[in-house]
Amino acid sequence: MSLIPDITELLARARADLRMGVPVVLRDEDGDCTLALAAETLTAERLADMRQLGDPVIAITGRRAETLKARAYDGDLARVSLPAGADLRWVQAVADPSDDLNTPMKGPLTTLRQGKAGLHRLAINLTKSARLLPAAVLVSLPEGRDFAAAHALTTIDHASAAPHLSERSPLHVVSAARLPMEVSEAGRLHVFRPEDGGEEHYAVEIGRPDRDKPVLARLHSACFTGDLMGSLKCDCGPQLRGALAQMGAEGAGVLLYLNQEGRGIGLANKMRAYFLQDQGFDTVEANHRLGFEDDERDFRLGSDILKSLGFKSVRLLTNNPAKIAMMERTGIAVTERVPLKVGETAHNRGYLATKAAKSGHML
Ligand SMILES: Nc1nc2c(ncn2[C@@H]2O[C@H](COP(=O)(O)OP(=O)(O)OP(=O)(O)O)[C@@H](O)[C@H]2O)c(=O)[nH]1
Ligand SMILES: [Zn+2]
Image 1 (cartoon, rainbow, N blue to C red):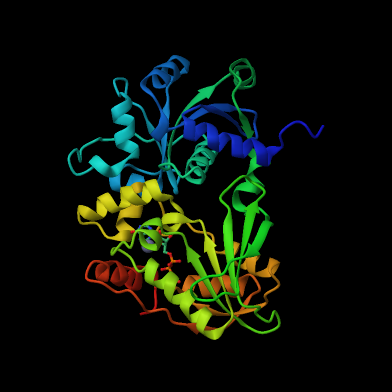
Image 2: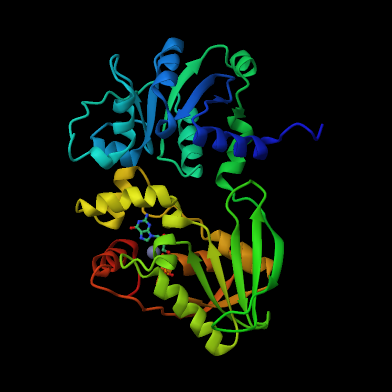
């Protein structure tokens, strides 16, 4: 019956629910169910109601656990049990590092060693893809199926969801039109939309690049602060304009504008990272303290879009070796790396040095 939402649609609904602070029910391979809420959007009332159902735990990433000095028995994540008197502020302080320096002693935190962690991992995955802090509060539900039906909650079956969580969603062009630009009057913008309800991405084509020759290409990740506000903390704005100018001068090129703001953590989390940077942490440390990896982007999106536009090889404008490696792995040949060194300022010198030292960026 096609009128019932499929798993991709249910996952999109679950992400929206978590962003709104609505619980979702997660079911594992054994039929065991758990109620999950994002720590960031949890309310005191819902926390109290969760306590009525059992003993809630907070799932945090291994990165966040490291900062909190909590033992992560599940490797990439830790299940922290909620002490009897712990209130909403306590939960939020476990999830959100902004107050870490004022209240360094949250623990000692007790983390679970026994039992399954699959649904906790799923919950963290959903909070990340909803661009929330990567932390969720869960409580197990003995009668999960009935509870979900009685409360009109979205239910996600882990086994059906798993293949969709590691694979990226197919992208389709929804529209394209001529876009005369300062750098070239022969501009064209293509809008790509994924099937999973996620962010749209754009391709700006300059001129009419020959599909059989390597095209001058840039994979640019969205940076609201740098691209639009003229932020001095990074080099994104000058890189964006520099890449477009070079394409305009050569008369051909393609710039992919990928909506992976803040290296894939979203603008709200990037501003949380900036707040930590103001306290002295570098760009990578700030991501880790929030519970994220250094870089949460999926550059394979870029090769999907290039292929769908008919390109097979690129002269890639980048200083990031991970972008080159991904292109080669996914079947787009990189015939040349074109350096993009623009926009160094007194404010971003440390940021650029950290990227070179910790993320392997070429100077
Ligand atoms: N999390 C986080 N993201 C940041 C920070 N500063 C900039 N960004 C994001 O980093 C990304 C930079 O993207 P790119 O310019 O494609 O990146 P790059 O990996 O440096 O590679 P090249 O520019 O090609 O050399 C954008 O998504 C920015 O929003 C930061 O301090 N923290
Ligand atoms: Zn930037």
